[in-house]
Image (cartoon, rainbow, N blue to C red):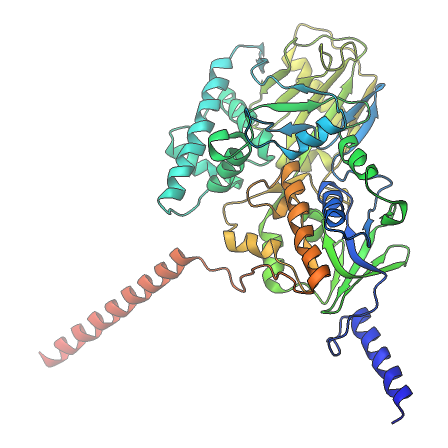
Length: 522
C-alpha cells in the first residue's frame, strides 16, 4: 500500500479514537487545541489556572457555563445591596503566625470588605414568642466540642466510623425538646447542611478540626462574613483578572459531554462547539456528576461512579426578606425552636451596624431535606410560611408585608445540583480516593475531592492547586501521576462478621449431624 494512503488511514483511525472513545492507536499524541482544559470557573478552576501559569504553562482555557467566574460564590442584587446566595464566610482565618486560610489571603489582596461574625450574639424564640434558652445553646456548643474530641479518640483507637448522631449519644447529648433540637441544629446542621444521623462522625470532626482547630493544624475559630457590594466572588474574579488572558477564558459555555482516551480529551458544549486538549481538569460540583448532567465517553468506571454516588451533595438555602422597617432582634442571630426540627430555625439580621444598617434585610436559613422541600413549593407559599414563623416569634407585633423576597433553588440548578458536599457515615476513605482519582487524562478537583476540607472554599482552593501541579508535571514530562484508586472498597468488619457467621453455621451443622448419628447408633 502506498505510504501516503497508510498515513491517511492512520490519521483517520487516530482521530476516530479521540472523538468516540475507541482504543488509542499507537503512542502518538492526538492533535490538541490546548494543552489543558479547565472545566468550571469556580475557586478550584481559577486556582488551577493560576497554578499552571506558575509552572510556566499558559496553553489552557477555562470553560465556564455562566457569564462570570465564581462558581458557587454567587451574589445577588437585593434591596439595593449585594447579598450572597451561596458561599458567604471565610471560615477559619489565622492564629498568630500559624497557617493562614488561603481564601483570607485572597480577600486581603483584593481588599474585600468583611465583618467577623459573633455566634454568641443571639436571641431565642419558640412557639410562644421570645424565650431565653441561650443556656441550652451553650450546652449544644459544648456537646459539639465533645463530639469532635471523642471522634479523635475513636481514630486513635482505630475504631469504625458511625453517624454523628451515635457520637452525640455516646457523649451523652440526646436532644429531646424543641429547644434542644434547635440548639443542636445551630451547632451542627447549619454547618454541614445535613442532620447528625446523615453525617459521618469522624469525617465531620476532622473537617471541623482541620479548619478551626489551631492545635490540629487548622486556621482559627473566627469566621469573616463577606459584605462587599462587589460580591464575595470579587476575590476570585480579581485574582483571575491579575493573570488571565482573554483567550484563556470561555464564558457562557456549558459542557454536556467529555470524551477521553489515553491520547487526549474532547469536550462538547450545548451549542455544539468542541474543545480538545491533552489533559482536562474537571471541577464540576459533586451534584452535577451525580445527576449525569455531563456524559462521559467512555462511561466512568464503576469504582468512580460508586464513589460519586456514595457522597452527599447537601443543600443550604438562604431566604431573603426586605421589610419597610426593622421590627426584630438587635442581635446577629435569632434561633427559633419549632416543634418540627429544621423548620426555619436560624434567622440572621443584616440590618446591623457593620453589616447593612437601615437595609431592612432579614435572612432565614434552612438546610438538607427542608431545603429540598421548599424548592418544590411555589415561592409565594414559602414566603407566607416563613412569615407565619415570624408572626409566631413576634405574637404581639404587627409585622409589615415584605417589599422584596428571594431564595435560590440550589438543588434544582443544573449547574450545581446542591450547595456543597457532605461526608455520610457509609462513605469510606477508599471511596474518597476513588472520588479524587483521575480517569485517563481527566483529573478531578473541587471541594468534594478534599479529604480535610470538603464543603469549604479553602478545600476547593487546595484541590485546584494540587491537581494542577500534577497536570503541570504531565504536560512537562509526560510522566503523569496516576492517582490511587481502589477497584472494590471493602468493609473489613462485615467480612469478619460473615466469616464468623459461616463458621457458626458450619459448627451447628456438624453438631446436628453428629447428634443424628448418635441417635441412629443408639
